[in-house]
Image 1 (tube, rainbow, N blue to C red):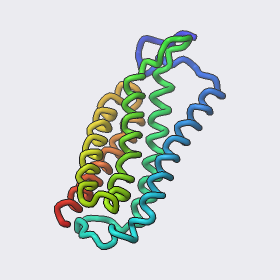
Image 2 (cartoon, helix red, strand yellow):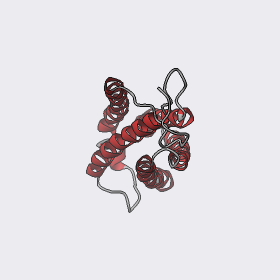
Image 3 (cartoon, rainbow, N blue to C red):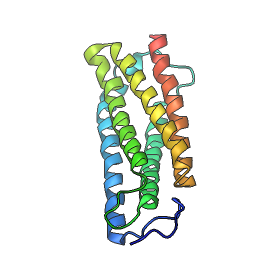
Image 4 (cartoon, rainbow, N blue to C red):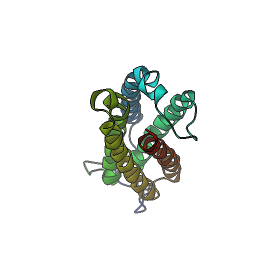
Length: 183
């Protein structure tokens, strides 16, 4: 198939419904695996060392994190799907949004690394885990800001989703840094 126009926001080839379902399922599976892995590491530590640690006065109740992350994970899967679909050019040509899609993959890897480092790392290596986690979340925030900026070329909805994600990551970064400063 050929693109409908030279405008990258409207140049998407029309993928089959089956391909769209498959890509959507893979993206949802990817974020679900990251979320589930993070939950497994968090569960044992939230009632353990984290309950005893001094936290920022603006730290929300623990029950807020699950619903927020669930919505964010669903959103970032949708954002990736939108950009993937709009970057299609048809035939054997590579996706025009491949740099963005690579950045999205990098953010997912960084996201997957933060929780085990912050929560699971402390019992193993102590406070150094918090510093490593801070470096990870700040790198993650940087990648997501880049995704926000570059998503505008493809989808305003994807950009809006990534803005919400960046705001939450900036907030979460302050919580990570506060644990370092207060303990």
